[in-house]
Length: 503
Image (tube, rainbow, N blue to C red; front, side, top):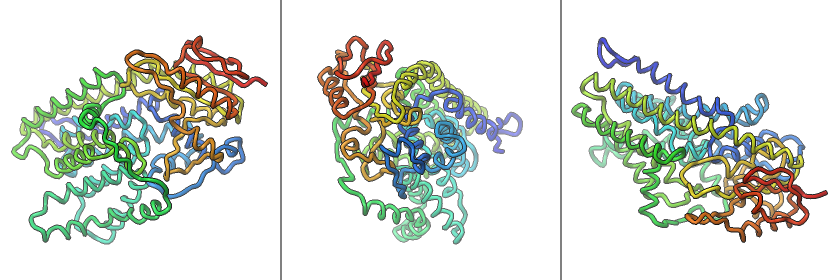
């Protein structure tokens, strides 16, 4: 166990394990976790797990297993669902993401600094970052695996056939979890090698040492060879504001002021750690990795290989690397103080996430009882209007109707249908084109707060035309929901209305 001094050392290994265990709390113990995209992931997992049966969902969805770079949670959850059910399996695998990421942070700290550093504790709040709050579950699991693999890279001994095979297998696992997590691993490997380059002659040995990391190029080419459409969308609207936002919003998800405050305090503590560090203030391999990741976040377009939000996914990891790069303090007392400060900031972040999720969970559970009115095996159309103009908080409300897939074996128009990365497809081409994720949105103009009633009426009419058995309108006061011919109100709350087709 690393020690800060001979007498008053903190038990860093135990503190690291304690932090990892604490990270399980919000997902394991809040009945309905607040990840924005989690309901759609759950529905996808349920469809994958039940694809071999001839249940009601088989009328709507087809499953075509293929090796793609977006399977992080899909594989383990599908394997576990037969014993645990999709909801519990998804909860357990999702709960492990943050602890695995924490393990990767501490392993990388030990490999780079030779010990668990205080900077690793200061980086802990960034584990619960914006991408995690969004519920980019495959990506976040891939990042945890990438950090663990990078720790092995930073600490590995001279090449042997066994280590090269192991590295190739690890790269394939990371790539299979998510494409962007593999790209992160490559940048971490580049940071590990760039520091040691002294001349052009050093380039090829460095490349040769890391060639096993490029093995995923083979399945990548096979996958993309069968893809259709454009892989890139070079959209850079309001670039300066957008790029500032992805870094400043690294902890976005709960309350804006608190999220900003925790990030500011992490930055302040990192500044103090930098001032108190030894003669070599930063570990150069981690610092260069942070620079490469930051450059990637700044250069990334809105979409990359049909994946949205590459920049907002990458920016928090870049910041994490910058913090992690700070060398241990010269004075053991100051190092102890920084460790405790990092734990306190992590507790604040974890506590705020758990609090707001636990506070909202009963309300979400009550709203989900509206699904009882949906005919089993039917079609549910979901229309979501943001209830206010606060765009900071990340909640599962927009994808909440995805629970209908699991609890009513019904079709819902909230599932992800990403071009060229589909395991699950909608059998009916018309439904596939018109009623996949994002079709549920009706805009509210801000700051005026007016609902786009024209779009609402058009969506209701389209759902009626396409024979939806039930229509759930969320975020619109019940008195303002337009009458839909042939439908009756089955359930209602203050801003929730469930319409069911008359028989």
